[in-house]
Image 1 (cartoon, rainbow, N blue to C red):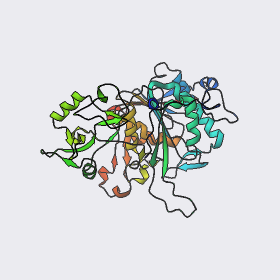
Image 2: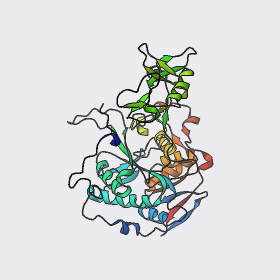
Image 3: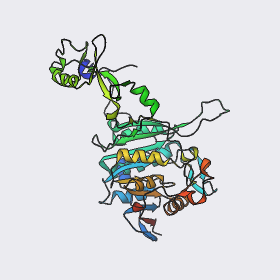
Image 4: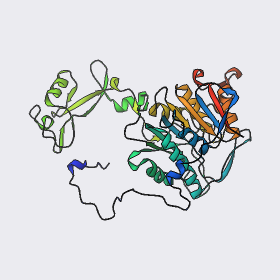
Length: 409
């Protein structure tokens, strides 16, 4: 694996003419509006439902452009949303139905029309986000690269954090001459460099423990051995002699010599037969395995034999819980303006976040209301479970009160 040399250790070369021009890359196309025009989008006008009018959580049965504009003009919410996750249509030029063959939504915007429609909403979302807020945009390979450029324009290239690759389904037995398409992507951006981050961790299993922590001490505590030096030359204490030896060329000690002496006295330094020191890192001090940017365990609900609503393109509840826990805290506002089956809203409720959902589809709103009233149905391997457990709520009942807003006639 190639390892980059830190800038401070490598003499900077003068930039070539035309390199890294101000503003970075841009995606240009006919009909691209100025951000000022988009931010002036008229706010939608809404009235509350008589049947669903309780609690601070908000569900809008409306086109999301006008609803986002209305939220952006609300001083209680503008600049207060901690997390936005959106799973918009993927520019497939298709219509989608639920498992009950009910029309759910049309995905007929393609090309530059799709890009501009989504860009308008992302500019309003940027206005709504708190300074320490985050955006997760879920797309497939059709438009993820176009929207990466758009997000760089809106948020700034430096606010890009990850392009998460998610395995969405089981392998496909294609007859056409391509590789099977089993992945989609989540672009993770933050509004500023100071953002909420609760590192996502996976629990250790026995196989990985034995692989990563192969050693045991006299008490049976498992540990691994890691270097006590790090890249880079230092002229201070960490660059001096310790136990009669200097750090390897181009390296420095990770700790000062006196700190290394203290660690050695506690038995935290392993000495190889050739006298090479290494630090003992114990399993008991690890809270879990940090989640990386390839997610193999978060397939779509229909591919994992778990509870579903039957809404098309429904996402995995555990995936939304991972995102919400990582990029928000209890009590924060979470927004999904392509709410669909309400998975984001259910995950936010179960984790004691406040939520806002928006969708114009009649079937989506019907599905969300049914989900909060009746839970979700098991499928696949679980269909033969007793009837009384065949439908389970997937949310915290204490945070499911909400107000439904509908467009004024």
